[in-house]
Length: 283
Image (spheres, rainbow, N blue to C red):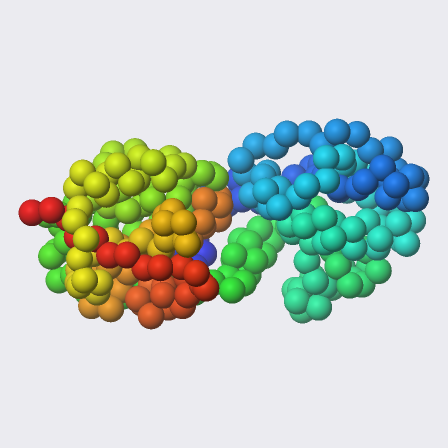
């Protein structure tokens, strides 16, 4: 089986990734004035699946109108229109508008797509090269999972209190939604939690019912919770022991349940105004 970030990924999930990253049609967000200037007919932006929302980072897009284009529609537009269209997507905060310079070695054809500075994914770019390109795309700014490097004695020591942690470490979700809170709860044996978009409230209820605060933040089995200035949980992880931790960086479809060195995990969430709280399971 092929691996991405040192995590096995089967062909069916790889094909789903390709479809989510490069759908047949994708949205290009424009104001009324921008649409008129580019001579494009816009309408109310459609709703998207959770996977589409995460691909295009729609939580950061406030423009309510868009034009939906397929690859042929897009490439038929004048070059100047394509170039400006991608520039405006960056302005509106839409995701997956990439820099040509970062991909030139792998995809020389993207230089011709929209003026040579930016490009977007289309199915034809991935066709026949799904694993190679998705593996490169997924590794941008991410470290490989280290679940195979965690010593056997660490997994064995966790087995009683955290019966499912080894099972879920080094896996990808089947789609968007599963997050850090559900990953921690699943490790403790909460069935199905790894498949849910776990909200703060049930996670906080679980913390209150099954854990107590501790100052031993690097002890095996410690739950790490990063809170904002209002005390709301923003991220959670689990200390495995031996300098390793487990977390799921986001709710995105490409976000793994990832074992990392604790120092690397801390660096990812060393954010201003975040306060780390530590919890241990009640005996």
